[in-house]
Length: 614
Image (cartoon, rainbow, N blue to C red; front, side, top):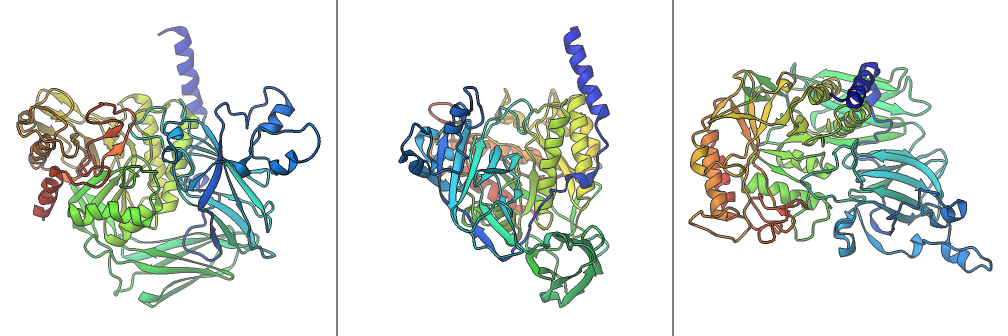
């Protein structure tokens, strides 16, 4: 090994060793503001924007004059300043800039921005109803990838990560009228980002999920959770935030169960609840997804969440829902609405259309939300209609395994996901990665993520989509990460990638551990909707996709520990890597429906298979 490389490796290893010991409580987001509450102002709508290809809003290479006239985040009325006599001038004006709908990705707003990858500044002007003693917060559900938030010319927050919420307090910056909210959004990924620089899905830069102004009392309910334990008890907590958080009386109420639980907060503002579940409680299942309105109350503040109660566990090679074995009949989904020009604008209606195809069309009970935390609307609809969920963070293919900073970023993403979704009965699996190559540093990284999940939420199962090794016709998993997983999951594409024919797929044998449940987390074949080739001489036909599914499902039925399927993928989705000029044109065509919602022939093959399973 060259000396320079050796020194670099030693330096990184020492950084890992010297890193402070992991403490789960350090990953709790500083502000959560969960649940349905009063005094929320939705800032969705038309936002103006300004491209910043050379990042002039940040840099100052030519001195303060150049910087001042290009800083989009300044609280300045450019038109008014330009009308004054004198030499001053500006090279931006967000008040008079072009506009697009927020939430939504800029890639779909205008052809000019289809493949734009970099920094764009967004502005929203708004008024705010203010009361004395209130606190005010901006909640961003997701900004992809880095966000720089300014209110009335003052920087109020930053965030990295394109799929999890973040909150900034603006109590001292907000004004009653004429607020100028400016967000710099940088979609660039780099060697230390999560995910890395290369993915197999579309960029979708921008403010892709809602932005809300939330106003609360000085001391408010910041977080609250409740779940059903294996012992049959309802256990949860409530966290107050503010100057009067300690030793406060709080209540939990579930009117439908005639249940009221009083408690008091401790010195840190936290109250805990623990009571035997009432005999009348109905457990959440895919066939009967019962949800309860749960009210968390403190003097001056109240939030409501709709929560279902169920347990999830493993026993040997079985997955147990409420103590009973279950087979997961599902499919993978990317966060992309059905339509010819998706903008990652997944609201309640879009979520219902996507998940309705799984529940009602495929007769499924499960969905893998790939490859990152999806819009909260997807989780809430899954709760309501009865779909089990695999939730994943974008540790995808490869990241900087040797960087403590990258690990900290991935841990924070995992924590932000868990804290957002831990009240969702639908979520049963936390995934810590997808198709990452086996190596010592990679395994160390994933092991740290598994440790994070178990510390934050031991009530759910841990998995990861693994690669397999093949010797002849035998497939086996030789991955040291197995010991960290509750459920094994593998992606397999024999019959599509590689030289296997569909006849070869039936010859494959699986050697997998007998003491853990196995999921086929991915398998699939591309097909352009409407392209037929009954002779099966060419891939990309609907006929080939049908026979691929039949061969793979027959092979899967022979694996004794298989406990679930999530083929790749429900809907054709955008991927700039996929550029075959006849069949792809920037779309991954492995969907069972086209981008516009047209069902392909293989849709019915999978639906019939799921209908036949008990």
